[in-house]
Length: 457
Image (spheres, rainbow, N blue to C red):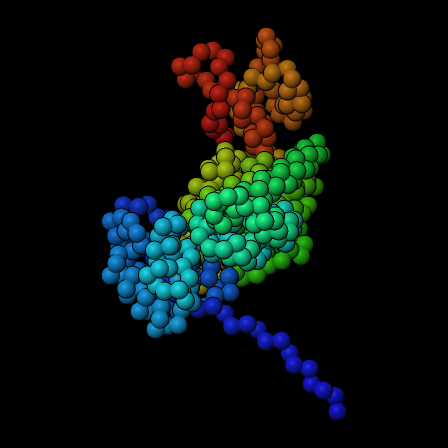
């Protein structure tokens, strides 16, 4: 009789209690209720079970514990009653808030915030060397001012990518009177410096790769959108690819590029990028600089919006704000109102099209509206011409040739140091010429080079 081999058991999920605070006068894209619902989805994605939530309205955060002393006591009782192991705040806590809250709630309950939760999810979903390095750097930048425990605490949280965070050997080099925390901080800074050097190499490789793509004259389209809007599903539909898809937040983290056939026998390269979210941590934006440059260097943005979400417009605005933050708001954009198949009345999607610029209602899962979307992308990339007036230095010979080759030249004036060109360019080329545009009739001296707003015709 064969001996039965015991199967490994799945470790129990942590139990979490959520805390949301409504600060009067603070601008929020989502309501407190919607924001906590999103936080619960983030917790589930991270492998945590939500066992309850607590909210409070304040004119300003408490200096010591973020929420008021009475709410702290209430939170402690509720956490103990629900056997919660971790308390997750919907806003970013400063180190003092986190320290005082953990002291008040007891040693058996950890306190983290939205930023730490997002970083944990990123650490789980980063699979390439670049992604792991970016996550590890963001975690260190977040943890450095919060370093109050032994080194092993951070070692467990590191995103990986270049060896263990505690392998620098700094503990054995402690000088006279130097505390353990000082040693740990020095070791973290050394590791961060190393990661930044590695990411600079990645950025240089990406820059070279983008230059090769531009020389091929195949336009690039960046898929952007709120997390879980359906970007990966749309990329699979457009390119007949097999990109990983899951109904959860931040299912894909590393960028994926596929070639897509457009109407009229034209080609485009479409890149799926990391999903955005409200309150996206600044450290994450900074750490993912190399990846987000794929968006800033694109010829066209394809903004995917989950039209079935009750706050679709708020999510749209959150993405727009992030695009401005990374310097990509000037790039032409079309909008795909996705997940029509989830609506009881799909006509409702078409009624809100006018609220979104250059939009098409689609279902990436069912394939509805895909042809209309491809026609719109084709029009924006190859048929929509925009009036421009630029002064190009002679050293920018490639741009001068590009204008002559793909644009509609109306006037050329050769001047000292450069050439002034006026005419029309395909919308996809605007980003390459934006730094050299001349704004007419604005009171500036003749010939002053400015970044101008361009009106499409």
